[in-house]
Length: 81
Image: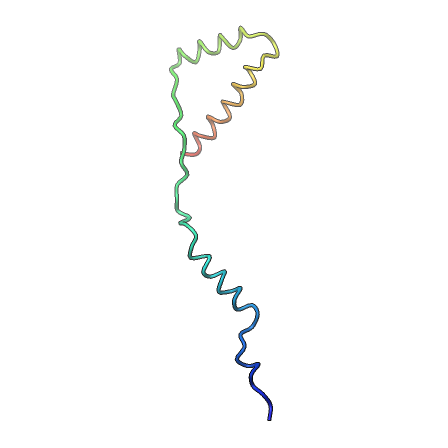
């Protein structure tokens, strides 16, 4: 008579599938909103004064590069909202 002991053995992928299904339940909600930093609004007068001060800086000033990086971050924070 043929043995049927192998018929009751779950396939090797069954534990993997169960682990994947259980780990999917542990994940957080995908509806969570990103925390956006506040963007400070400057008056036109402040912007004009800052532009004049930047123009007075010597050529190749590292401050100009830093302000450029800050502008990119402000744009990214603005689109985050």
